[in-house]
Image (cartoon, rainbow, N blue to C red):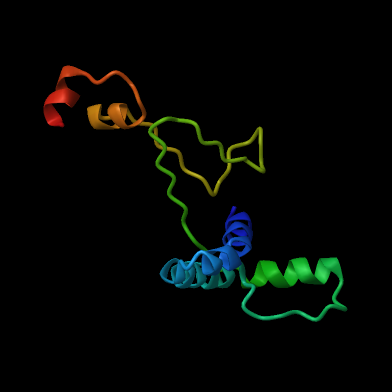
Length: 117
């Protein structure tokens, strides 16, 4: 997840500069730097390292983090690498949408939502 975010942000950096989005370029660069730190990619590893050595080295350097995904529409999916067993690193909290969230996801607003704005 983090690696994909890093790749996607980096791939658009030159385009941001070409379009004159300098502020956005610098904001993205800060996020890219933080993602690299979380992924343990701030240091370069020699090219002669084996795949196993690279994997072990990267596992040691990954910074623990918490990802909170709030999806009122319920369209998200996070793969469980331990399936069919529960993932010990994930907690799931189900909830009823608020009237405002119903409106945001495009559902017919209730009277309460209409009154709440």
